[in-house]
Length: 305
Image 1 (cartoon, rainbow, N blue to C red):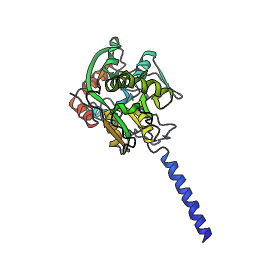
Image 2: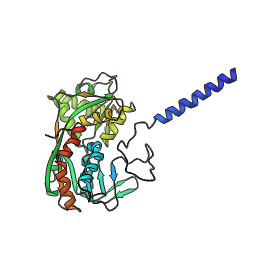
Image 3: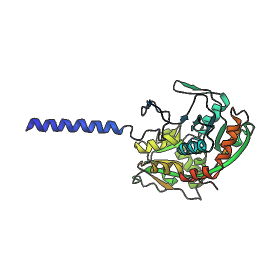
Image 4: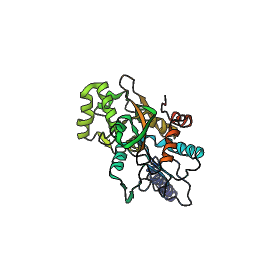
């Protein structure tokens, strides 16, 4: 009997260990649907490259999207290919817009051991970011809008009610780094609206120094994961990011930010003057403001009017 009990205990430990190991990467991206291939070698936490999509070899269209639109890419590209079957090899990046802008400026990007030297046909970002380099574009179009929210763990264990709570000593914050993430500046404005310079200074200086505010490199991936893995308690993000995490069944809740403290961003697409595929770029620009694209953006919580 003692031997049997010992075996049961050991078996229980093995099962528990396997369960914990299986949970280690339960929430890791990519969250989109990968392209079809006879071989898929995606290793959670090591080799997953969630913000590079599609065909990197001889693409017929290259789009650099502001990263927080990653959830729309599957639907957008599928619909565009359906309406324009002449374009089947499409490459998309959904990195932070500041990083994409530097990639355009310098002509290449290295991710791990991979160097990408593709020039984009289309670059999308917030209106303010696009306005910094008007000389890059032949045409621009506003196609979607968004606002801020706060994401927390399901059940809201820290009882976060608004932006002021992010200044509390017991609240660990995941915050986009304003150096390369446009949303970072927007959130700083919201902090000032909610609690003045004191709140902004507490979250962006004092709490950064004591490591209770974590500055992300890629907030649309890191912030949800930090909440899901209990590394942060609250993260200001775009409304659409909280919506998407709930859509795919992750245990996250969104805390609404009142309009008096919120910030609205307008997303603008620009066709590059030296677009390698100018006709494809023109067709995609028209597609982005079409009813088909608007329905896709609204599906994920963006506003289009």
